[in-house]
Image 1 (tube, rainbow, N blue to C red):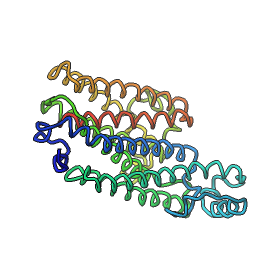
Image 2: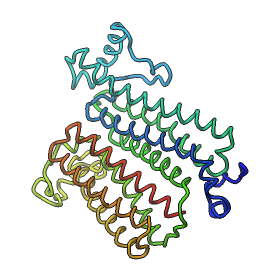
Image 3: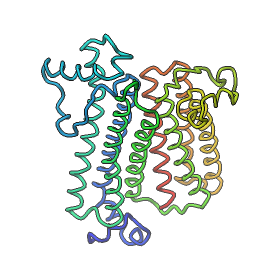
Image 4: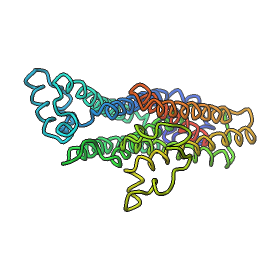
Length: 360
């Protein structure tokens, strides 16, 4: 097969010609995309750890290249620690922290940034190599390049987020900027697995409009729920109202509590009651949508891979909701908090794959 036969990401015309040969030829690209997705997954989990341990502000400078080398001497550690002691988080929250305690939070943040560098390196080398050999061409190259550009932008967003926590009076990053950072990472992850899934040879599986519509709605709602989860983390809303199914004795809190701040829209970001309530309600909506998707897909496409994928998404969503409840009741210990965030990415990945394959 010529190189140009792989340019259009397996559209119908190419699939009808020589799909098996195209699949074999693009398998290295598919594996490479999944490797990057795995690295992004790891970065999201480590990012969750930096948030839960309060480590995100331990490195007060953005040095994309030289920052890859951590402090190697006690003098270098003392310099970094001194920089940290100048920011409000140390002065208002961690005053009296020892150098050993500082090293613990420093390593979390350094590891998070190091994963970002690894992703950039793996992506850059792979893209150059596959483009030079002709495996990345046409629409496929454009899609992958767009994800790479979004990844570069994500690095800048990460620093903007950190910088928001270094301002006078701030002891943590701004919740909205944390939401933007996590949501962008989630879009990148979903895009990587969706593009990779589209490069695998599969049987012809035409989808009905209802199946495609539900797949799209599920993917978008998962992304929204992850964004709301970032607001919960940013406002530390998971440390309050640690009961279920009621919140402070109510299933639906009174408006006087949900909109206690003025102007009213600030409650959507800074009011722990409102933020957690929205996260809960969206979780219920997502559960309902995934169960509806199972019923509708099995009804119109019984026994198909799409029906099985819909069932898997519903099962993962139920498990994620249960994990979220346990995490809330336990007041978000590190292990459960990380498990909850990691499982959210699994739900997102499955939803992204399903969405892509309904458009085969």
